[in-house]
Length: 454
Picture 1 (cartoon, rainbow, N blue to C red):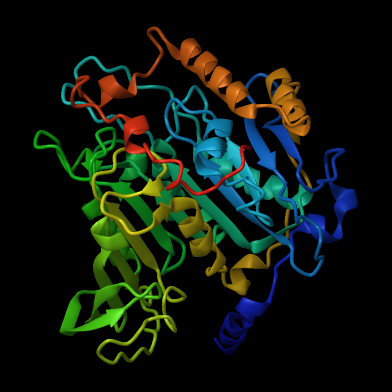
Picture 2 (picture 1 turned 90 degrees about the vertical axis):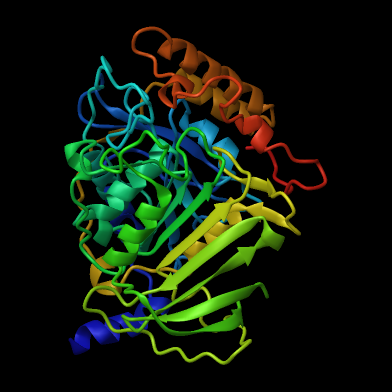
C-alpha cells in the first residue's frame, strides 16, 4: 500500500517511456519516427484482412528525451475517414498540438464494434459483421510501444459519433481501462443493455476513470435524449451515460448545502458535496451557450479528495485537476466536432483545446504505466497510393483539403448500395428534420479559431 502511495505521489513528475525509447533498434519495422511525419501502417499478419492506422508525428517529437511524447488514439465517425477526422478536429495541427503523437485507426467496412442504429422501424435490418475492435486497439497499443517512443502513462482515447461509442467500450474494458489514461467523447452513441452483447456490461479495471463528453442538444443523428419511441434497453441517452459513469467512478449522491463558486474561467457555478466525499459543480457556461457538469469522485472504495470551499471562491486550485467526469451540453448544436461560437456565447467553444487540456491534466498511475512492451509486432507499412499522395501533397504545401474531400467522396461512393449505411435513414429523419452539420458549424470567419490546414 505504501509503495502505491509513493508511486502515486511521483506520477506527476515521472514519465513511463515505452520500449522504443530505450531500444529503438528492436523495432520490428524499418522506420524511425521524425517530427512532422505522417505514415500509414497495416496492423495484422494477413495483408488482405489487416487493419490500417494513420500516424502523425508532432513537430516537437524527440526534442526532449526526458519527456516522451503523449499518444492519442482518435476514432472516426460513421461515413468518415481518418484523415477527415484529422481535418475536422485539428488534432494534428502543429499550431495546436506540438507534442502528442496522434493515431487514427480505420474502421472495417465503416463499422465499429460499438456501432448503434437510431431508427424507429427495425424490421429487416441486416446486422453487419463486426470486427473485434477491442483486440485491434489492444494490438495497436502493444505494437506502437515497440515502434514509437512515447509515455505509457499518457495514452489517451477520443472519438466522435460511433467512434465515441467505441471509446466508451475501451473505458469499460477491464484491461484497456488500465492502459489508457483518460477518455474524451464528442457526440457519442451508446448502446443499451439489449442492443448487443458487448454493451451488456461495463467493468473498468480501475476507478475512477477520467471521462469527458461533449454533445449538442440538437443532435439528430445520435440524439442527446431518447426519442419518444426509443427504448433505454436499446440505446443509452447522454443523461444515462453520465449517470452510469457517476456510479462507476464512485461519485455518490449530492448531500448537504449547495454553495456558490466560480470555476477556473470565472464562470459562476453551484458546488455541492457528494456522499462519497467528492463534489459536483454545475452551471451555465459560455454566456448561456452551454451547460457544464463537473464531478470530482474518489472511485469505488477510493479516498475522497479533501476540498473545502468558501462562498464565491474560485475553483482554480481544484479545477480541473481533480475532475473525473466532465460534460458540456451545447445549446442549439447538432452532430459534429464543435469549433465555433455557440448561440449567445461570449467566446468560441473549442472542443480540441478542451480535449487536449483534459488529457494534459491526467496521467496514468505509475504502477499501471510501468509495463514491459512486447518486442514483437504485427505492424507493416502498406502499399497505400492514396495515403502516399496525401503525404506528398502535404510536404509540397498543396491543398490537402481537396484531397480529403475527394477521398471522402470516393469512400462514400464505395459504400452506396445494399451494403452502404445511410446515417440519415438510420436516424429516421426527413430532409426538414435532419441535422445539417454544415449549418451547425456555420461560423463567421472572425469567430472561428485560426487553424492552419492539415
